[in-house]
Amino acid sequence: MKVQPALCVGNGSVSDLQIVLSESSDSVLVLLGTAVLERIRCSREALQCKVFIGRLVNGGWLLSALQATFHHDPRTMRHWAAALLSEDMDFVVRAFGGRGAEVAKQPGSQTQQRTLGREQEQAVSSPGVSPA
Image (cartoon, helix red, strand yellow):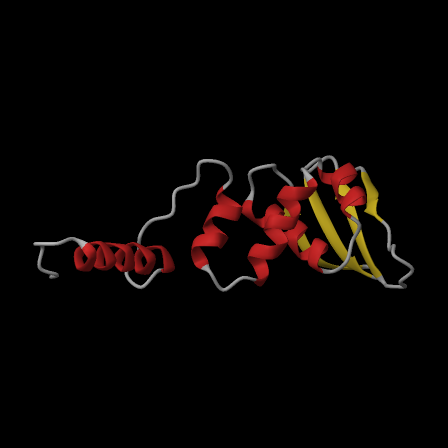
């Protein structure tokens, strides 16, 4: 098994946390000392990889180092990081779904609430039409 350090501790901080890229299994290992904390499948489309990168961005890792390691656009990685901190599920779905991700209108979702609000405004402002 061929492994190599993928990201070293940066930004002037000291940590026992190591992130190691395993080329043979196409995964990333997160180590605390010598103990494996997490094994992440490192596919461009894998949700767990996107969430992991978002966590690293939120943890203060440099975008340039993450881009060199994972080959994703810095704006995309910032979107993933913002989605992890967001309470808006529509935004989370769009951020992790990528381009062309459709947000299903679920009862109570912010998208549905905005749509219903617009429909009610149009019904009230249209003469001769009684609101439902």
